[in-house]
Length: 203
Image 1 (cartoon, one colour):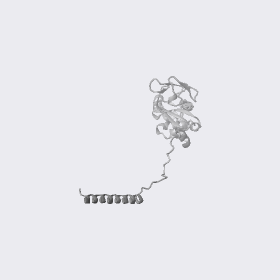
Image 2: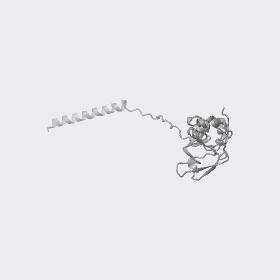
Image 3: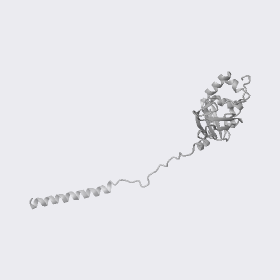
Image 4: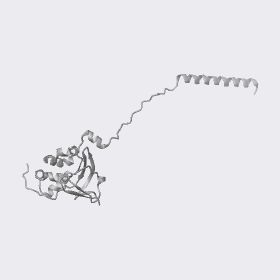
């Protein structure tokens, strides 16, 4: 390669380098990315409030939960008839073993009476308070053979050898928590040992 050609090549490389440098400077001046030095940060929603605190704040007590569940409509009617609504809206805490409508239907069939005749029973309050235990008793607190005194004064017994049971009734849903206690749904109405069916005139 002669000297003249080599000289031209060197000049071309220098010119290209200069153009590249100018282009780079221009880019630095006009195309510099904008950086937000103080980006907005979303505060995480504090959803760690305990369930019982939320229920307390909302005032969702045992009666309100039962009233909101159509499967407890007979129980709610019985509580109203026995004037126990205000009691179970109290501070508590209470644990209620709540018979479903199907449980009441089974009892009505066994006693051969109507729901109106059941609600007119003089001992209705004693039947209902036999389903209530003072304190907050969750499913995890139960042990096989455990007994608990009800508000009625009689005791109920728990059998955990198979499906969880209270007396002869299966506990079908556990730990429905309320602001003033807990509800466990059961498939059979608990009947106190001293209950006697009486002839009544349904209203």
